[in-house]
Image: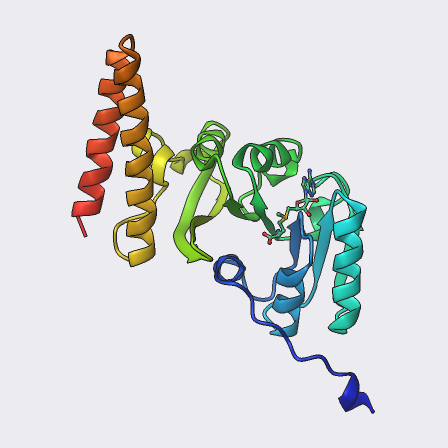
Length: 235
Ligand SMILES: C[S@@+](CC[C@H](N)C(=O)[O-])C[C@H]1O[C@@H](n2cnc3c(N)ncnc32)[C@H](O)[C@@H]1O
């Protein structure tokens, strides 16, 4: 009978797989904005981590998380918690904090409201859906250094996933960093992400030129574009 109750574990999509790949083995994870809780369930079921907090600001997603936690028999290891960002997660409760599937500005806001993240022992695994440059700018200005970054293609979109930690001496700066983080052109997915950013910058430069008034801004944008193209060429 026990055998009948066993639910086969799902596969994570490539985007969440990339996040999972940056989680440290045997640490405790807080997944902020968990929604379905697939990531924490998968991590405990694969025995990568012993336990996790699956947290969301909204009751609907949290109910979905609780349902899946029960469904995959992970209730002893995954705690579903209603919380706005890290407000109700306490510093000694988690080592790796995943904030994925949200806009970069919201991710920055969540980090800003949890000053205890300014601790080199805490790892942040961040996956912005939009506004990645704004998130990188926030990290840089607040002493967080990006230690790993990888682009991942999933469902026709290209995303970036980064692992950052508080390390003011090693923060990255500059326009290239803002656009592509620490990605290099060493994988097809990284190249696709860099090329996508090139396309966006080209569009911005064209728009600025067409407006007729912002030639200086257009020149600056094209300079950054040229730098990104050099990164692409330096495969
Ligand atoms: C698109 S889902 C992402 C789900 C999952 N993390 C993923 O990447 O597949 C975004 C989730 O973030 C939650 N959310 C939005 N703002 C939040 C906040 N301030 N604190 C916690 N959760 C938040 C939403 O309720 C929603 O469930």
